[in-house]
Image (tube, rainbow, N blue to C red; front, side, top):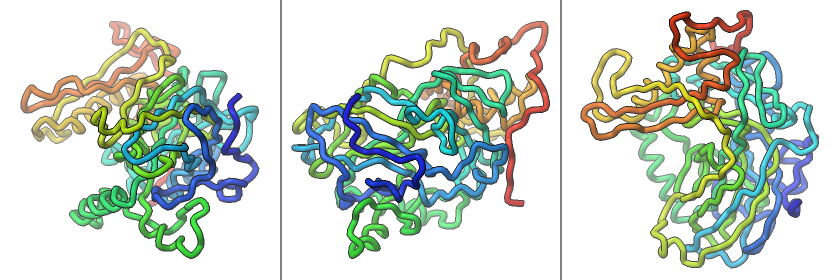
Length: 418
């Protein structure tokens, strides 16, 4: 096993650990550990809400999820010799749920969860159709997941970090805040908001000195979106065996990682759409000096996916185009096309007895494939959602005999603000 350089004690809160990570991006957050090119090391990761979501049959914790506290990130880790303009090579050697802890109150101790965030607290990809909070708990058995809240389904997980990235420079951080602030200003009272500005409340900044804390907290970027440094990309294919190339913007690179997922469908469409958990990740790092210029990687990551995804061979696919539910034609609207494909899959799954919310949760958590299939045939783009047929305990293919009904009496926990 590689050296453990960021341990977490499951009996303590994230902020009470021997080494404290962070939940904002800022170049002045000091590294918690130092590594060298060629090193392999292990990192423990806390579930992104630090235990605020519980293994129960209530969705009130999802409804009231403390969004100002996320994400609980492990790091930063300084890489010796890394300089702005380099490419940081990160190999994902191994990862999984919390080691040797298959039961307990924390997600990752033998279980995880998927949530539909309510419109008034985060929202999701289909928030207009699903404005309330719902939750599904998933139990882990080896590589497989099942849920007491979504019957007749079992699938192999595709474990990955939802979030990994390098620290921004001061100049890049200012650029983020300026452009996202300008977007917010176009609709400052929108619910959910168009973007999340810096928020000092609940900021965790590692070992930033108290004399600088308020300033840094007021500048630090939220970790919700992906950006030039990688960040919260939620790419389900960042699994074991992946190699990721990160741009370096500060001396040492200051790599951070967290938001582990047991499984996820493309798009993580419910916002809390993966199976969220804590756990461990083993990494190996190296450098390509001057690699950003050499390979034209001025921003964002490039990566080589791992070769250990679930081996599903049969799929049932649903398509969508750039036409709203009200029949309004949009021009090559790829987001709308993917929304319509997801809604078509949800409608189909309800014919088997699933509620719309159960179907939505399933599309967020299961290893579905999402594709942008056509972008040139004006006025419609075409997006597709591929659902592996083998995850169901029954045949979901259309047939003359009609749909099989799943066992009734099971529902996803629900909570609303009204």
